[in-house]
Image 1 (cartoon, rainbow over the protein chains, first blue to last red):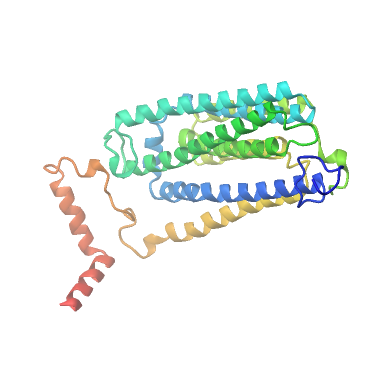
Image 2 (tube, rainbow over the protein chains, first blue to last red):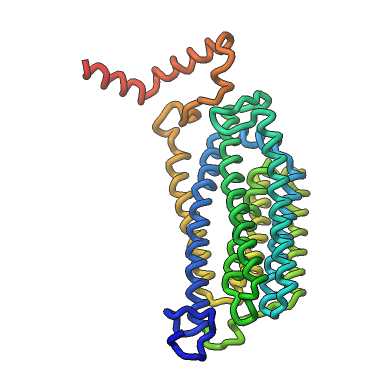
Length: 215
Length: 150
């Protein structure tokens, strides 16, 4: 406010101009995404090491995942990635109504993903295909089939948590778009949430073949 | 790199987004379809190749890495390299444990419920695990330390 009248309202006082503010946000976001990749990296390592120790068991156990539901969920996430990319494009063109529709569609698709995931989990709980010591299912050949389900629940569980946080984050920018805070010249939060959501999509792109398809 | 303001708010044509999404859906269909065919050791290579292609499309176009300052692309690639180093170096350990220990197949405790229920018929198996445990290097080591404690 005290910096003179030519500064837009969205520009915080510690940045010299809107460009610098946007670049800083983006750099911070990418460093955060790097830590996210390393966070999931631990679980990808978990998968690789235990698969190397139990190759046959992994192949036998993965047959018990429903690749049709997994495939549908992959399609759902890819379409949601498209809709959030289109939401960012719409706000760049100053089309607020369209932005809100695309953001709302993305949330809807994320909810569909979680509902399908719920039915998959429900089925596994019912059969006792649970992680670690809770594993009671006896229909899988090979040593230590419970380890496959530990990997499965750890990876899809952490990913599912990211989907839930994604829904909250997209809801937050949807609400701020509705209040008219974003425009063609300032929409950094929408872009940042978009980057996060695309990363959630990328992680699922790897989880799907690793858990459901490899045989 | 960011001096040009019009470059900064780079707006891609709608066709590009729809094209990338179509390519991603097509590749998903391909990866599901080929999973029903057995290519032996190439199963993993094909599935991971398709996943990497899809991830590259999302990162370069949807996440604008292709158009943005290459600093962000560098950060992204660095994270994947760090992950690859972490996994490969750990594999040097986990794949070579057989050179030292006799029981390669049991590097962790079997504590799932299926191994605890039905003790009647698994009595022999349970005893077998114990007997096998006595012969391992680590077990003799621990009994050694017990002796020295006495």
